[in-house]
Structures are given as C-alpha cells and as structure tokens.
Length: 73
Image 1: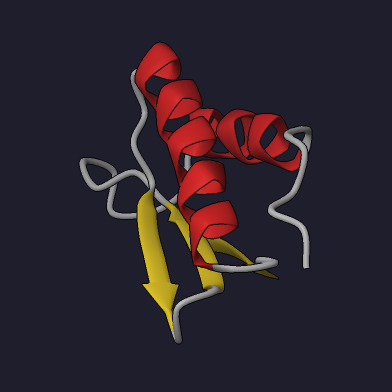
Image 2: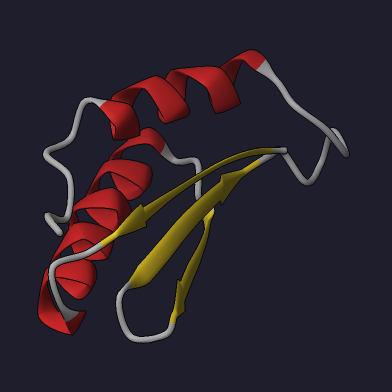
C-alpha cells in the first residue's frame, strides 16, 4: 500500500481536501481509502484490492493526489 498523511488547517479544510481527492479518484475510476482522525489528521491509502497489492494505476493516482493543493495547516 501507498499512504500519505497531512495535517489540515481545520476540519472543514480536511473535508475540502478529501472532496478534491474524491473528485479526482472518481474521474480516474480508482478509489483510495480516506482516513480522517482527530478532526484534522488526514491519510490517503492507495492499493488495488483486485490485485491484493500495488499496480501502475496506484502510482499514477498517488502522483495526481500529490499534485493537488494540500489541506493547509
């Protein structure tokens, strides 16, 4: 699995970031696991369930998520 974590400026900024990740994931047809804890700690976890591991699409999605403006904080 590939995972990356951020600390958002606040709860609303975290939700906005996850909305942007969700829009991107929907466009790509590849959906990561999104974790929001302690109201502003965000983690995105990517892997291909069908492959039980990582595929090229996982790395492509990760790079596109990295290119998004972060959640601030």
